[in-house]
Length: 272
Image 1 (cartoon, one colour):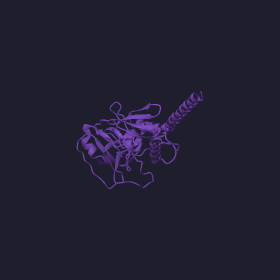
Image 2 (tube, one colour):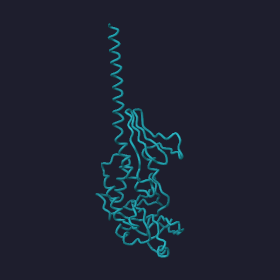
Image 3 (cartoon, helix red, strand yellow):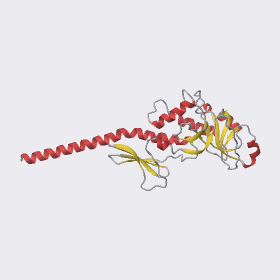
Image 4 (cartoon, rainbow, N blue to C red):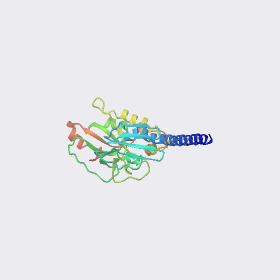
């Protein structure tokens, strides 16, 4: 009888320990997951700062009890997994393009890219390549407000506005800027939606302002802090208004009938 009783006690003890370990593992994952999720939610907004990216950044959470997996859509399906013993990227067994993801979320930021170089208005670089590709990356001769650009820009359909996030008294301009979410000389901007074959820059700018104003000093995840830093680079204190935006370039499709007028316009400092 004593032996049977001892066995029952040992079984109960083993079950208690096992359940306790499972509970601790689930608790560990549930504590670490919210911050990761905040990064993914913020990346829904961060990717909108770049031209010609998949602006519906598609990710899904899959909970398996002892671990959570966050699957997202780049050129292939990758996952970021949190388990009791660690966290990290998991790639597909077969992929058209392999990504060397190691650091979260920075290595996902590097997917937010677009072609073209942009130059600051005070740059000595001055070159205009009208190659008739019908899509131009443009650096302006100075900074313009949304209202000024809405009134003055009559040369085509604007798809993206480059915002000045470097001239706010920082004095840290570089030779050129690129659209790369992981670049120190990153160019950030406003995605523009063509409505009825016309630009509606004020509405586009307001959408950007509503998005960026969600981020403040309470930002906790890396991507939230990144967005808050961009906000502070535009305006050092308080929330941003559309007229606070300093627009120093754009990407646009020109109208076919305005080639000569467009090529003689002073607003275009650099065409790439």
